[in-house]
Length: 432
View 1 (tube, helix red, strand yellow):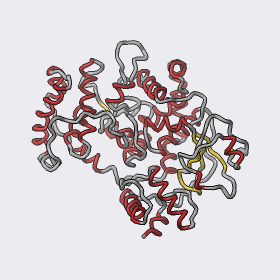
View 2 (cartoon, one colour):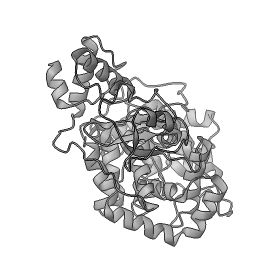
View 3 (cartoon, one colour):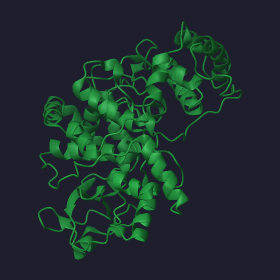
View 4 (cartoon, rainbow, N blue to C red):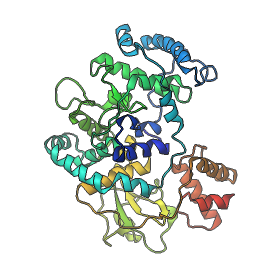
């Protein structure tokens, strides 16, 4: 969470969804939010060891202990008491497995249709409807207070932890300290570690009970510590914002509060599946090109039933698998879910699962299931070759964000191809 970037490391997204659906090992749950989080709330250390000096190695724990001593001083300067530090850091050791999991993320990539097959499976829909029924009173109260539909809140719960079944059992302080010690994203994780200590110091949870995913996300709806500080709520009125217990009330309310504070509009769809007319101008299918649905209807873009989409607000056309897959008309609420997690696949998964929980139909269009999604390395190669060819992707990060989609579209236009922005293997082979 915490203001997500346009892309996401694919493994973090997939590991959590597949894990929650199929594996009976809570400790393996992965943080979706973390992989794409933007470092908007960070605390730069006063003294920072060099990446070379503190490179992860088999001697990591000895170096980790030296780093931990320096961190205690920095944490104290930021208001963390000696008592809290003693409670939270006593006996803390380096967790090599956390670094291994972090390093193994990037190559894990799946196409959106396989992701949705799991994220919005029949089993997950059935479990979600059972959860809605079981917690209907609380969810109805949460919807009334925050103006976020209970199906949306339940969908987040379902994708993050399979309705609380797989919340993770890694010690949050140990995981965050290990990742803060590591050079790759030390600034972000040290900020999260400080936030986690602030939570403990406030008395919301003990160090022992602060558990979650290996990457620091916690509770039923997998809040990172900074997001917890900013958005968690005490909905049941017991004096603690408890997202860790078996009772999901505070966690569900916190997810609703998060969406509400980022501008959720009740009654507006996140998106609607649409039918594109023959001769549709694919160059207009981009996030920054918005029209009222009635104006889209004038161009032949209508719902799958052939009827115009009501004017819920300005909307863009999104083609998550190019011109051969499902076409969506997306509204501002799409962007609100995106604040929770910046991956299009995640947003579509949340949105579509919430629709199915409310009795909506499956997507009607087919997906290009014969396509192989590009690997992380291939995505970086695509970005490199596009940029070298004069179609700047604004960075080489292995993520198909808006800048890369726009660069692909510009290349397709220049080559006389269908400008749907779809980064396919065929396109990469053409660039080679």
